Length: 603
Image (tube, rainbow, N blue to C red; front, side, top):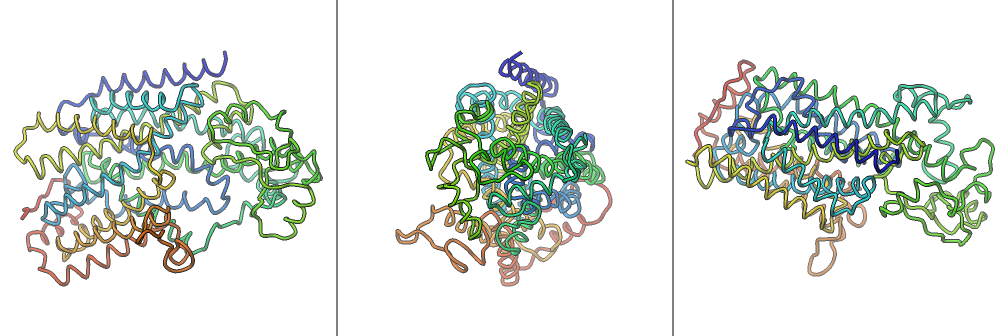
């Protein structure tokens, strides 16, 4: 059976499973729509949380980033998993004890202000919408490559599928669908990794294969990879750190607090029966996430090795001269997987020296010895542009694995993108229908009408998400960074201060959220060349163009969070103190007993 037919069958069966679960678990009340009735088992919720979190960025992009960055790519592993530790220890149990449906509702009640709740909704919508662009784009890429349809058609199919199981099922349908999607995506990630680890090292466990010797040699996989990338002018794979150590630290911190502040992740902990279950659920989520995240470094290293072995065979062969003509392959003899991925535009070849061969190397190296060797070989620049996003998806094809494995990877990539898209859409729907319509504009709305408003707002959100996927804004490459930056700089500090600072008042919380959001947006947009001062592109503050002490925009959320905390505490000291009943509320929420809802009077 050919690859396209196999992929249609595997992806079609997975879609039928999702739709069947949605019909079985459709929501019949606002409680089921927003928090699945609050009765989800912690193990089930942990699995759904893992699927909700492991988006297209985790499944498709993370190992590709590690493949390109090497050791430095570990910041994604530390940041994203570390965020769950913060979430489990500092946020989830207390928010569950508070007993509300959403993050804006917690902020509105804790800071006794509808204005604070409205600002939280704005932050939530901005973070969720920017994050969802990447998910819908990932759906389009996976469809266009593996099902051989246009990018637009892929996004339309994805929109329709999410509509069926998210709008009708609400959080209840999404939860059980995400359990199925987790199973699909974890199999799709680990099965090819086992195959490739066996091929390269003879060890079926990828985590152990990463440190094993290559088959038939006494050279380890990582040592060989270090040699290959060094011969081609790249930084050593096992030691390279992109940028400064300060930036790596701040980047990791930003990912951690951004993870802990993402509203669609936090909402999952409102679906379990008790405070204890919220903690247990967070622990299970970490275990399920680790099943993929511990494999990712092996997938990245093995994907990079396979890529190098395919397009620069002379470099990979022992004792071969990497600068000889036979070290590279002829373009007209390129393997079939390259031809297929060229059609997506994610892999491009440009014959800069006209020799008909593919030169893949670091033409930007500052090593004079390397440059001299490249010049002597007659190379005029790197001729192959490989998008990091294809490394995981193309890896089984590069390794010549069976068609059913390649089809499984396609289904896994779609499951990862759709599961996170559904969670984000649920957060958007709850913010609009529950926090804005019921919380601000129509407080006496009936449960039936609120449920209808939630479904309509989710349907509208799906249309907007699809349109953004079809027409991504100019800053699309930085949307994930922007989403994390917004969550880290606006929502996380407000939640932390709401739980642990009895003296934080509404004026401080509002000022902090606005300040953190503002500085983060300005910096990210400035760095992406979309912010202008009197018609001149903003050129940065300290450390060169578009930089602040060498901190990249992807890492700036941590700086925005620091601004939020500082502004909030200064303003709170200069304004009226927190009412006593709110102080009592904070004290009661922090008491580690029970799980009953506690509410404070709103002024």
